[in-house]
Image 1: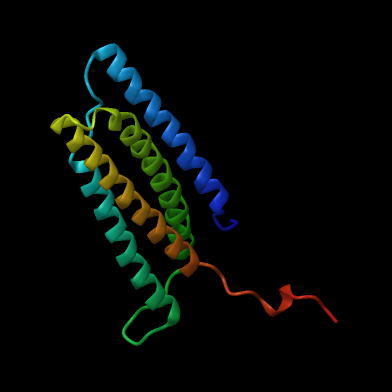
Image 2: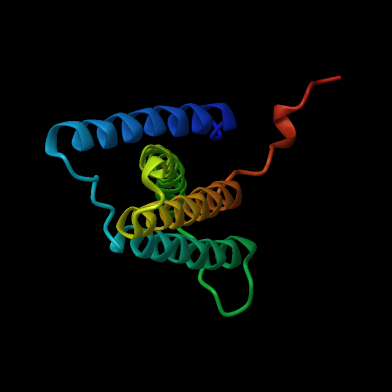
Length: 154
C-alpha cells in the first residue's frame, strides 16, 4: 500500500463539496425546504476521531515494544493501516459534503433555523477534519521502517 497523498484528499473534499452543494440546492428547489443537517453528524465524527486517536496511541505503544504491552500481530498492523486509509478518505468526503451544504445554506443566514444548520455543518467539517488527521497519524504509525536492503548498493 502506498501512503495517502494530500492531492487525493483534496480531490475528495472538492468532489464531496460539489455533491453537497448540489444536493442542498436540489432539496431547496424541489422540496421547498432546507437540507436537514442532523445534530448527530458532528458528534459521530468527533467520536470516530477520538476512537482513531486512542487506537493510534495503543498501536504506537505496542509497535514500540513499551513495557506492559503485547507485541502487535502483523495482520492487526495491516488492518490498522487499512482502517487509517479508509478513515482519511471517509473524513475527506464527509467534510467536503458538509462544507458544500454550508456554502449552499449560507445564503439564508438571516433565518435562525438555517443559521443553526450552517453551524452544525461547519462543526461536522471540523470533526471530519479531525478524523482525517487521526487517520493520517495512524497510517504514519503503521508504516514499516525502511530496510537496509532497500537502499542503493555501492
